[in-house]
Length: 102
Image 1 (tube, rainbow, N blue to C red):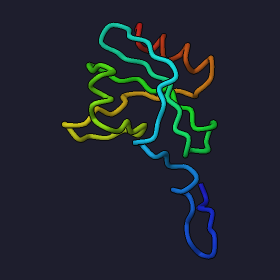
Image 2 (spheres, rainbow, N blue to C red; image 1 turned 90 degrees about the vertical axis):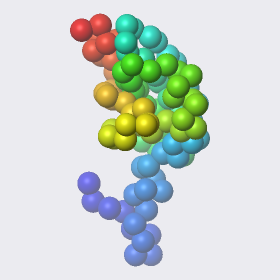
Image 3 (cartoon, rainbow, N blue to C red; image 1 turned 135 degrees about the vertical axis):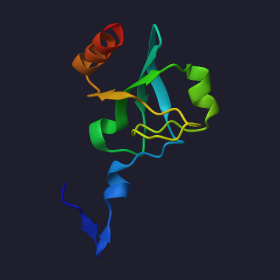
Image 4 (cartoon, helix red, strand yellow; image 1 turned 180 degrees about the vertical axis):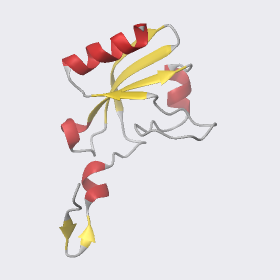
């Protein structure tokens, strides 16, 4: 992806990176050890800020207690990151359910 610039300054983060402390959980589903969430990040422009994320071995309460929910993959042991992401569409939600049931 080519970086967009505004007066020589990269604005990719401004456009693409969500504010991980500013979110609204739209939909949730628990399936065994998996938690599937559809989250809206109002500061993100991709897909109108909607993300479908799958978490493993955690509850919604644990995620909210973190103070933020980062939709990106990561490796910090003390933080819960998603293990999978899907397109924020009806088909993406169905694929997340299939993933969790497998």
